[in-house]
Image (cartoon, rainbow, N blue to C red):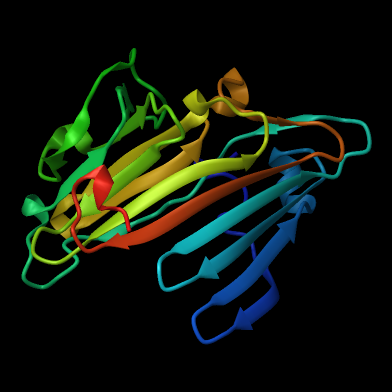
Amino acid sequence: MPVHGIVRDLPWSLRECVTEQDYARAVVDLSDDETTRRCFPFAFHLSCTYRLSPRSLVLEYRVENREARKSFWFAIGNHVTFNMPFSVAGRFEECSVYSPCTLQYPIGGDAFINGAPRELSLSKGRRLSDPVLYDTMLGGYSDGKAVVEVSDPVSFGMRTEQRVVKGNVPESALRFVFWAEPAHCYFCPEPWVGEPDSLNSRNFVVVLGPGEDFVWEVELTPLLTPGTEQSTP
């Protein structure tokens, strides 16, 4: 299977598009085919509903098991990427990231976990210039607070939050993978359910029985006073 999974480079179909004065929604989807079954030999349907409001953008992913008799397991993630800073007056090295995580998992050159988790606190924020934030994974979230906030101190911030809406998945399965290219001012706080190599290890995967479905949401919310959890509108 490719390092970014089986659906990133596949064509999605637009099934619905609705616009109103202060709301918009679009639904895209895809199903298994000959290409996906080479790596993932199961019948499935995947849809993503984009809901845009004045407050936020919500991406709702739904995975359905269309097998008649077989269960399957999977992990899912989104490659959220920000071009930092958010304003021409800001500087990448002065931007910061906040998260109520408690654990950090180092990622090796092969994109797999490289070593045991260690304690990490970003509760007071940390500058994006800190290399400890690159090529790593955060976990240890609790009380439904799987959140990362990235802020440009001279303009605004952006909150990325993930949650499982439907599915028997422990909070320990919710992770954020950080990737950055400081020279090009890119920072990626990628929300994941699962971890690198989950399909082989079966650690923190989503398991769906025949006919079952799973729903996961990623919400992006602009913050006018970024940097703390209480800043959310």
